[in-house]
Image (tube, rainbow, N blue to C red; front, side):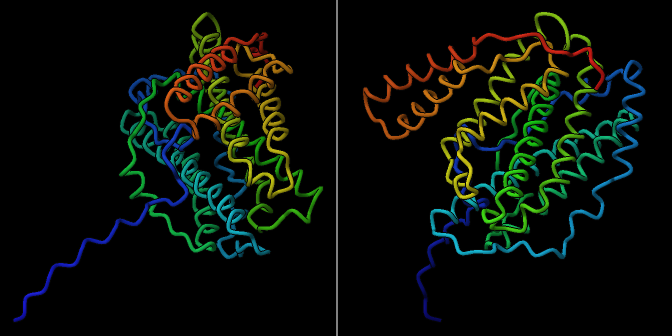
Length: 344
């Protein structure tokens, strides 16, 4: 037998193209599930029962039609195609992250004897799985296949205290609602910009996000220390700021997708922040005063972030210091009282 040289190992196929590792990359999360099992629903029993009933009714059961074609309707340039695919990948991974978190909470809450809470999280996991599956189908139409379970096994798990998860998931669901509904409204007013059937599903889809946000508002209210006092004020500031910062950098620094839809990224970002901030008044004790000063700082942060990616040497150090200073100034912007005691 003639000996042959071994073939070089093939380069591993990326689990998720367009998913570069940086501040804006979607994460997978875990939390204090034993603490979650001690959630006292007594004060929120009426709201809990109503929300569980809505989730059981499954109003979007027939909405996510697996036979619906999701191919793009027009040619895109390579740059535009990359922007669309990047949006799909990040959105798909974010939805799958929510599915994994809710599924694990449901499983562990069932083990802890909290059957009702377990059922609620199982139903939210159902919704997130549908969203991820639909986005994954749009990616397949682009010739991209993502092994989501394998991706979740390769990426690190970020651990958050339960209070952080309640705040951050509430905001991610509400900001997701406003992103979807504002895109839907824009495309209905400008149908020539609607280049993919996927967008036609955004209006009912966003109601899942809104409903999940209301559920997390109810869960926040089950823990009185999260709605009043110094700790709640600090959490309100930190999570509104961090979620708005991430959104601004994602939309403004990666604005090609929104320009492709005929939207001005900075204006869209500001609209989403204003609506989300106003919605958060019903959940958080304090919200930001999103005035012109806050948005000017947003513009300076985005521009500095862009410059940082190109800088080297001493210039990079100088820009890092400037970036940190801008972040601190934005974090300490004035806040005003919410309406946390209003009805959900």
